[in-house]
Each structure stands twice: as structure tokens, then as C-alpha cells.
Length: 303
Image (cartoon, rainbow, N blue to C red; front, side, top):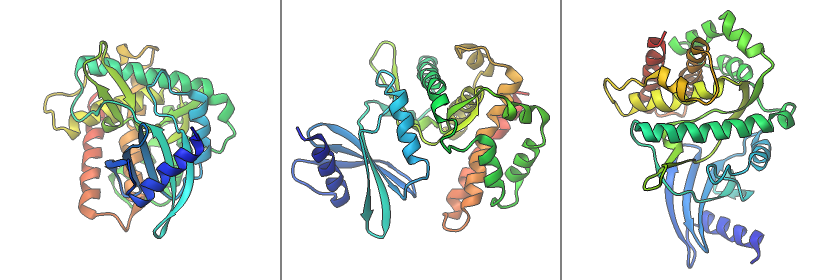
């Protein structure tokens, strides 16, 4: 089989949204990205992103270095740029991963599966980190300073400014144990496959990737997945047990530093929403900001 030709044909199918012997449906979408389920000689997930991020080639290199982690992470099989309508787009072809997006607060068994999968990814990213220290990937500090320069005034901007004045936070940023970090372990980015023993958990896509202190990865997971799911799905009285999460993480981590770093997710993503400014649906942006503020309030309650 001509693999390159097959992938090019898949891209043609998605660009044209029609082809014989090919079934195409939308898995999920955002203002800048659409992911399709494509069945044509196999099952694939095809992501179409408007414009190519500067670190796209680096991210592909990271994925090649880390591998699929036993099928836990979708690798990129093929990538190319295409002009679609008025936009220059990047089209990535990935193997289709089974499972349903996490659309509720996870059960104890699902929590164990999520932590196991994220820890496997964390170890893979740490191992790959030396090869990408001078790759141009941004650091957490770069992201915070860059977003602050364009964010509108508001509570989250003030929170970020206080963050950068926190002595311990700055010590963590200055530490030498920085490694590649997956920045968006949002509930819907986890696929849960039921009916297996144990439950299998897969990650849809490791994007974005940046450099951060090692403790940032579990902190992002606890905040972006477990706290966010309790707020997003309105599970009143279901505040995650932080001490149980810390104990379940396979490496010893400091509780106070974990809480400090858990604040990164709602603050950083709020700055992204504020920096996007015009062109956003105001109601959607306000709803996202309220959700992130709710996450921050839960994180602060752990202190």
C-alpha cells in the first residue's frame, strides 16, 4: 500500500468533505480547529487547524520521541499544509483512538486510569526533554509574560500579576528541573474505554506543549481535569479530594507547591480568553471566564 498516497487521499477527502467509500463525521470543533472521524481503509482522526503554530514541527518531534505510550496517546501519522477556502491550514492525520470523552466527574476507577495515563505521559515527556531544551518551545514564564502584555484588565490579570510577585512561585520557575509539559488535560481530552479491566484511558492530543517545572504536570492535571470537571458538570459537594489525588500520583509532591501550581490553569487560560479580545462570542467568553473563576475558587479553598 502507498502509505503517503493513502494519507494524501484522506486529506483530499476531508478538504472536499466527500469521496467514495469514505465516511466523515465531526468529532469536535473549536473556532480554530475541527477534528473529523474518517473511515477509509481504517479509522482515523483528522485534525484541521487554521494556520500552523510556530511550534508545530517541534510538537511533532516530541510525539515521535515520546511514542504512543502503548496506545495511550494519538501519534501524528502524517501532516501537511493545505489552502482551504480563505485559510492556510495544517491537516494532521492520527490513528482513531477508541473511548468516549470524559463528560462527567470521573469515578474512582476512572481517576486511577487518568492518573496512570498522565503519569506515563509525564515520564515520557521528562525523558524527551533534554532534546528540546533549545527548541524554541515557550516556558511557563514566557507564556504568562506574553499574555499579560495583551490581556484586558480584570481579576485574572490581577491574579497573574500577583503570581509573578510570589517568591515561592518564582523559585519554582527558576528551578532547573524544567521539562516538557502537556498544558491542556481538560476532561474532554480524555477518552474513557469502558468494559476493560482495568479501564483504559487515552489522551486525544497533547497540545499545547511548553516547558515548566516538573510539579506543574500533576498540578495541571488536578486543576484542569478533576477540579474543572466538578465545576463544569456542576457536581455540587463533589470537590475533589486533593490529598487523595496527591497520594495517588506515583511521585512524591509537595502539597503547598501543588496548590500554588494548580492556580496556573485557570489563570493562564483566562489570560488566553482575555487576550483573544475581539472576534469572540461575548457570551461564550464570559461563560468560560466564569467557569475558570469557579475553578480558581475551588483551588484556593484547599489552602
